[in-house]
Structures are given as structure tokens and as C-alpha cells.
Length: 325
Image 1: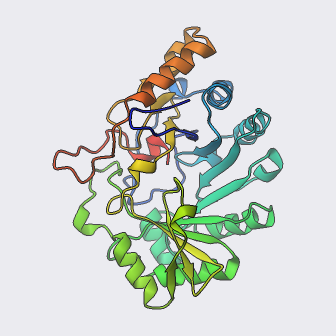
Image 2: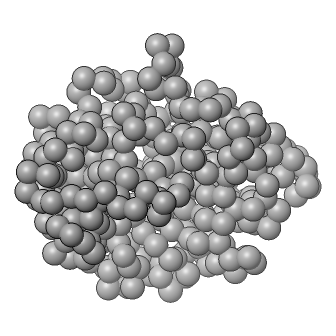
């Protein structure tokens, strides 16, 4: 098991396949992009599958989510998904993506998909993402639903003064199309280190905005488990909307996630200041047992919380695109 000293067990593995992205979202990176990780430092497809296999067969991982950057940019993604799906016990497999260029991942064995969509207005999309690709994202959403990857989940980040008034419109859109919407508080993970608490649209503000047009009823708290989103029935249900208040309503005490970066580093928290290297020992000939032991030690020292609300909080050196969501 991947257990820490506070009794939490990590069963949900987030695997970043690349730090590259075909958008330049303002809350993630600057318009000019970033210095991408050198290709020799990235894990190969075989290395990714080996580490996932160790996590699933030796360490109790039950869910694997492939992230980025933009994971669809990884040409080997369908093969990685298929080989992950062949593991026993079989983990649940999902992808977090912007949906641009979505291919036949359901046929490869993908179970679920989360698509980022922050606005329905083309001009605002271009302002936020610095690319005119809203139509491509919407096509990706439709393709995911048509492929049977239901319920399709939509993630939205609201930025004050840009799209913070769009919460009701986004929810109506998702209700009409049968998508499940989750709003996520903007977190201090941008490459520019420009995040400011006063500029963040809080979970409370999001709920107030939605409540002006919809009746929201808290879902059964027992059904939440370790899920990051607080769920609310919309107008009596069965449709739901989620709000992930990572900053103002942290859920660290129930966290069951562990992350593997595209260059083979284990992160026991999204905001961790330290990483544990699996890539170099693996390339030096370490056995599965030895790699599992490194992984266990990395998770064992996980802190009780992310510390965003502590006076001495330091933003991680890696931005979100280089960590994986």
C-alpha cells in the first residue's frame, strides 16, 4: 500500500504524459509558452507502463488518470491506455484533456474523460487560451459523448473580470448536453507565479452565482468519499454540479492521490516541494521491488495538507503543466 503517516492510502495515480500543450491558458502559463522538458528526460511509453504496472499490481493503485500538459499530444497514448487496461486487477482509466483532436481512446479501453472548458464565448476563449480553438474543444466534447465515454465531465476555472459571470451559462450548456460540470478554484500553480488570492473566484462566490438561477441542494456527503468536488443536486436532481474549493475548502484529509510526472518523479502532493526520482533508478537497472520501495517512501512522508493558507506557503517550482493535474 501507498500509505502516509496520517492514515491516508493513495489509490488514485495521476500520470503526466507530457508538459507540452497546444493552448496557453492564462492561469497556467505565459503566452509565449515554456521551456519544455528535454525529450531524453521524458519517460518512454514502456517506462510509463512499467511504473503504472508496479503501482497497480504491487501498491494498490485502483485508478489511473493520464494528464499533461495536454496528454492527447502524446502519440503513444492509445497504446499506453490499452496496455494499462490489460493489467490485472484492471484499474479505472481516465484522461484529463482539452479535447482538441480526441482520437479513438474508448476503443483502446478508456473509461472516463474530463475536458477543460472555461467559456462558451469565442472571444473570451481566445483571451484565456491565447488560441482560437473553442470549436475544436466543443467537437472533442461531442466526440467523447458519441464514443460512450459518459458521463463526460467538464472542468471550468473562472477568472475574475474575464469569465466569472459565465457559471450559469456553462451549467445550462452542460445540462443540455448531459455533461457533468465541475468548477475548480484557481490554484497557485501558474508558471508566471502571478496567482493572487484576492483575484481568485472562490467556491462560495461560484455557488452564490449559480444559486441566483438554479436551486442547489447539497448531495449526500457520505457519497463524496475522497472525491475533491462538493456535489449539489440541480433543481432537485438528478443532474449535479460540483465545486472543487482547493483553496478555501481544502480536502487534504481525505486525499488519495499520488502523481507521476512526465520525467518520472513521484509527487505525493500537487503542492509538494520535494520529489522522488523513479526514472534514474529504473534506467540504472532497479528491480520492480526496489522501485516500489522508493515509491512507498515518497508517499510515507506526505504532509497533512497543502499549506496554501499558511503564512509561509511557497508555490511549487514546477507549474501545473509540468506536474500533471
